[in-house]
Length: 269
Ligand SMILES: C[C@](O)(CO)[C@H](O)COP(=O)(O)OP(=O)(O)OC[C@H]1O[C@@H](n2ccc(N)nc2=O)[C@H](O)[C@@H]1O
Ligand SMILES: Nc1ncnc2c1ncn2[C@@H]1O[C@H](COP(=O)(O)OP(=O)(O)OP(=O)(O)O)[C@@H](O)[C@H]1O
Image 1: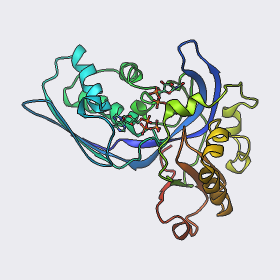
Image 2: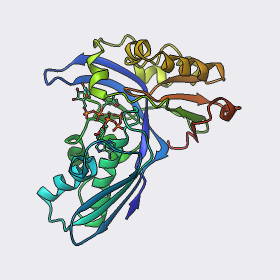
Image 3: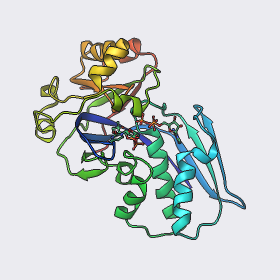
């Protein structure tokens, strides 16, 4: 079975309070985008995990795909599988790539072994792997809250717009990013602003990681400003960085400005 775990962007990210468990309650809109890894899972004599493409820190046992398989194997009678991952989504990039790989492993194993695990239960398994992971089970735009693993509907529509992703190649650890931020309640309701035209979002749909990370890595703010200067209707950092995204009305002349960038139409509703 071959699947394509895609990345996500966070449109708005409020870090509202620190929780007693050390995590943070957040408010954000998760939006799937088309930059994807490729993940193949086939039946085999013995279990194996192999990855190509971008090097993933850690060994096969540490990989989130392996963790997802071992987790399901504790509750279901799974025979061994061979997992092959082609990694193309950058790591430590705010795109949720590792979480997507784990969630798509759960989804693929559910299909391959006909486990009939409900969507809610697949989300329950995914939450045990990481906060971003449960989102990729349904993989639809959502408003998220608490640890970023509880979801509600959101009225946001960027269909027909072009989403540009620029990854400046800086690896940012999620743990470090959270430790640099002091949580505070948001002043405007994210869901309400996102119902307004995109052009109204600038300065109001905020990512609370930007202030500290832009100070530490000035290049990030430069890329964001460049996206605006090229005509983005809205631009921001995704998640804990370092990827920046811009939402454009058309393709413009983006290629000449960002030789290494990815461009998609916001087709996933
Ligand atoms: C920044 C985001 O990508 C926004 O979508 C997510 O909040 C991060 O989700 P993730 O990468 O799945 O993170 P996890 O693997 O669950 O947690 C990694 C670390 O990030 C911090 N963390 C994560 C999520 C959260 N709501 N509060 C936190 O403080 C914790 O220090 C945690 O130990
Ligand atoms: N399949 C995988 N893909 C990426 N990272 C993985 C994977 N499996 C395990 N990891 C570990 O997770 C770490 C990356 O986690 P991190 O949360 O920083 O990045 P991410 O999953 O790419 O997305 P984000 O930056 O949005 O959180 C890597 O350093 C690696 O050790």
